[in-house]
Image 1 (tube, rainbow, N blue to C red):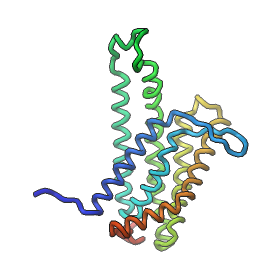
Image 2 (cartoon, rainbow, N blue to C red):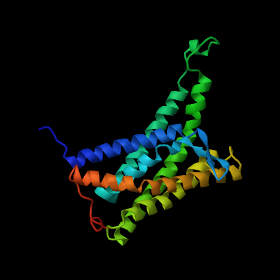
Image 3 (tube, rainbow, N blue to C red):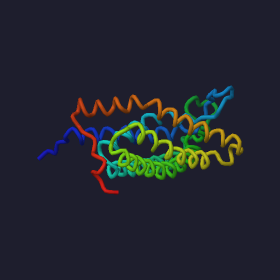
Length: 233
């Protein structure tokens, strides 16, 4: 007998796949800092920030339509894939280079350019895994507390409120672990504040898309959110 997936299972699989991909890609590119003009100054911001809106939307949909147990499962799947990525990157960095690639005339990828990206990226992966697990579990818990408190109403309150709290913790942990020793305290503080404020602003700006995503899942796919009391605390 061939197993078939219903609409709810297919959506869950798709959301999980995009979520994990966004998480891992964000970790790999996070070592690049860009300049963001704000209040007349140029502030630091990691390009790992780019996938954040995607993960924010997906986390909300997973929480709303599948519940905190499913969301926690996806959290641990994401953590496992981040560990897998770290192992693969570590092995790749340790592999010996072909002698031809070490010659002065070689025009392809060289050890210095490869290691500058991926060897340094291992520190970001470790920091991200630590911050990610803590922040995601807090986000899930706060989201469902707010959902229960508002009796399933005011979607924007639980979506934005859980992000404000969890991403403050995530930002402090990951930026401190990645840039401690590379940035002085004022620059590190600048990076933390800019990243966190940016995430909060995006969470607010994405509110219409959150409602649109819910409407799409409900009206097109015919799925309903779990009621606030569907899962015990």
